[in-house]
Each structure stands twice: as structure tokens, then as C-alpha cells.
Length: 82
Image (cartoon, rainbow, N blue to C red; front, top):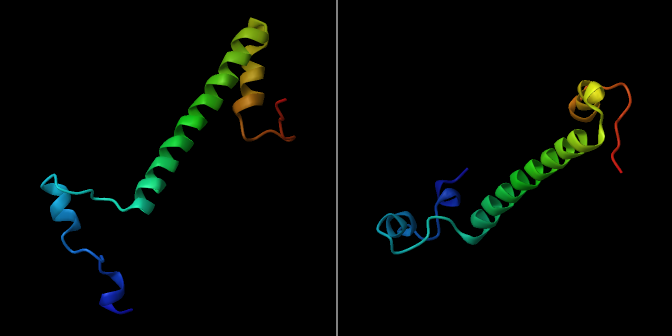
């Protein structure tokens, strides 16, 4: 692979960012970072919703079984939520 293929189109990009005159990430990388943060936030919201359902709907004596069915990936049958 040629070294030219891996060079940044703007060699002063990082220097500008460190000096506060530019951004260190290009548009693609910023969108990629935003998408990763959004995915993490959505995963957290899904987990919170599952916990809320278990805590409000399931009787206390059945909570361990419900927790295992909802969060355990080792179930013989896939658990679907409405």
C-alpha cells in the first residue's frame, strides 16, 4: 500500500485543532462518533424500560425469573417483548 493513500488531505488539521482553530474530526468521523453515542443512549433506554417493566408489572416473588428471561441470552427460546 502506498504511503500517499493514508495521508490526511489537510496536514495541518490536527495542529489547527490543538491550537483551537479547527476541528480534529472530519464530518464522517463526527457522524460516526454521534451514531455510537446515540446507540449507547438507546441501549441504555431499552435496558431501563425493561427494568421498569419488571419492577412495575412482575410480582416480587417472580422478579428473579422475569429478570433472567428478559436479560439472559442463554434462553432456549427467544424472548420477545410486545
